[in-house]
Image (cartoon, rainbow, N blue to C red; front, side, top):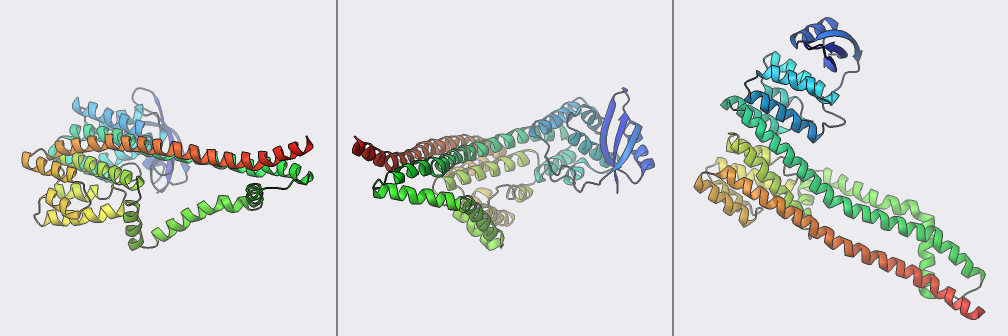
Amino acid sequence: MPQYAYRALNDAGKQVRGKINAANESDLYQQLSKLGLMLVDSKSVKERKVIGGGRSIQARDKIQFFVHLEQLQAAGVPLIDSLTDVRDSADDPKLRDLTTDIINDVTGGTPLSQSFEKHPKVFGDLYAALVAAGEESGKLTESFQHLVHHVKWEEAIRQRIVKAVRYPILVLIVITGMLGFMMGVVVPGIVEFLTANNTELPPITVALIVTSDFVQAYWWLILLTPIALILGIGGIRASSDKMKYAFSCLGLRIPKIGALTSKIAISRFCHFFAVMFQSGVPILQCLETAQRVVANRCLEESLKVVRQQVQNGEPLSMAMRNSGQFPSLVTRMIKIGEDSGNLGGVLDNVTDFYDKDVDEAIDAMIGMIEPMMTAISGIIMGWIVIGVMGPIYDSLSKLG
């Protein structure tokens, strides 16, 4: 079905622009009329494959989207009118187009949860599951509240991961740039001076010259080697499910990094499970959805076993303890939640604990990397200074 970029007017006379799928211009006019819009002009554009592909909708826009819906639903505004108001007030054109398609689906009788499922790039499994639970229970407002909390939490986790990765990469780039400049520019010039004076070079200087020559001749190999290693490891990992599982389990055993990965995965699991469980989603569906978001195949396979044991009648805490992948704190807290009937609240507490633990682990890792990188930089600079200044000093002494 072709897509049209349109310009229309709403009931208040405000101009609205967007894109919508329609069979022809007549169908476009009818769709916009149902939405309370008067078509001004339109033109056919290249059909998009998936709404929300390419540049994703920002977390801030998602939060505003669900906050707006939650407030309007709490005030008793009909869902289609709420969605229309959200669309008209959205600043992001991509969000306006997305909301327009959702309005068309809902107007045609499609449940909101099923409409969300059509846009997996923007709304993952949890979104549709929470909205479906709200539709069934008649508590759609609570579902929107949970989604606001979820988007905020998801953005906080993303920021933590960026924080954990950004600093080491930045320091590594600085050290690599410094080493490349010294070996490719500074050292060759000084070596030329020493060679011209027929100065006898000590072994440390010879090693420095050999390294400098290698950097100048094979700088492209030095840059391509880590890229090739990353692509090679990624290719091996993606070659089969067995390799994905093996690499995921191996990643959990890497000192410091493995523990941090595990904490982030457990935090994600507890959060997703708690949000869905508190929204009335059946426990088996909670496990099925949560196992897809832990982002680690080793833990995902363990959660499949947990889900199977729960389906066979085993308590969740016992099934997780049997998997051997969850700390005793998690299983013990879940047991308390099962006994008290407050499993969702207990999982919220576990999530908060691991969120703080992740922050502390990231800070500790950065605190460990900083002196390590400083020491490496100092050793490199010391090597260059000794290797260069030693012969220069000897040369000046002979001249004196």
